[in-house]
Image (cartoon, rainbow, N blue to C red; front, side, top):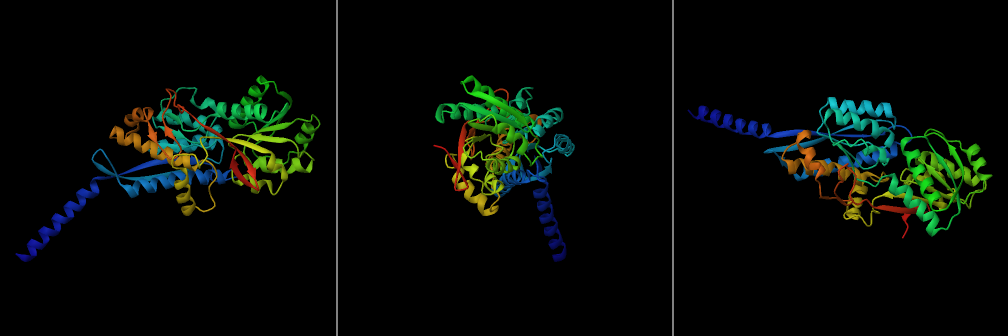
Length: 376
């Protein structure tokens, strides 16, 4: 009789445990960025932000639809290549992830956004800034950072209004991002009365810029605007110094506005001439920036670049919409995502009807003693 009672009690405990396990649901969120190649430092930083959010969510415990949710991250590498980006997007669709954080580059994010739309999965980018991303009006596409219209225009106004510069040359890397932000700067600067004296092109794989810089030097511009990323900007700054272009101001968008730029410039004094722009506030002015950065640095020492606070917020934003919808079904919670008013680390996030931030901020930076600092 005693043995039978023990077996009955054990069976009851097993049944309760089984019910508890049955009530836990695994929800996967996708992340895509270049974690290989020359831009891997950006991609790893982005992935770190998303992973940190996943860990925080699981530590707090989230219940949706009566089930305890365990979040997992499915991280994919797009190598900053549009074809690989769409392949990664399709892989996430096939895996039936609940939402996507990414991509980093506009050139990968724009084609991937159609893939996500076609399979009905919301995506939130905190890095891709080309305005064309939201032009199709997909109800699954969201951006939580200022776009190139704000970045390029802000830099042009600073060049004209504050620095009183008269002329400029433009270089872009022919990517969707680089060409887009360069075009906005050039059009805005010309509209303010500045003279464009030259336009040159490169690629996002190049490292030798001596020929195009020599051509620009002959035109004697007050400034160069580079539309591209820091793996090209660093060597370009070194070669500008070699050519005696120490007095030429150097402007760029968020693609060059990284901690790594100083290392890539390898001591070139032309780093002191850099003025770059990021979407959003500086970490010191973000609502939760300082405390968040301390936690990030403790977990990922030396890996911070630019966008990880945004990928953290993007992950949290997706889950906030799931909680408000009481559903992890993308087709259900996407409606709540569009109505977000989420107080994040970076800002209070609310969207226009096409998925852009309602009140995007930008911050200009320069470099002092090899460190990036916000301009007052």
